[in-house]
Length: 136
Image (cartoon, helix red, strand yellow):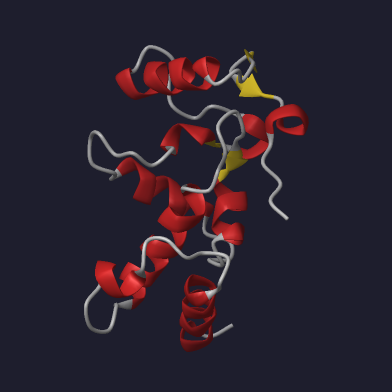
């Protein structure tokens, strides 16, 4: 798929009636750039992950209409500002692996948030069959 087709698909996803808040015209007055559309698709999709459920980076990219962009998702989430209300802690590595190191501030916060939501962590992994998010 060429870049213009990918951008068109991302834009169509963002305009989809399943995603209604926040209104993109308020987020980006004028024409949003391709990068803004990608981030917005990611953030709107991530905001829908329910408490107690998790997704893998690659799955989140696919759900957001971004194709195979797991690494881009990880890099983008690492750049979220402190205090973000987005549920970044619900996004994991492939197979339910927690990719943030044990003992790091972010890693410890992720584990604490997941446990507070009732997510079981065993051997640095989450059971994706039990806790994985599968939207309709």
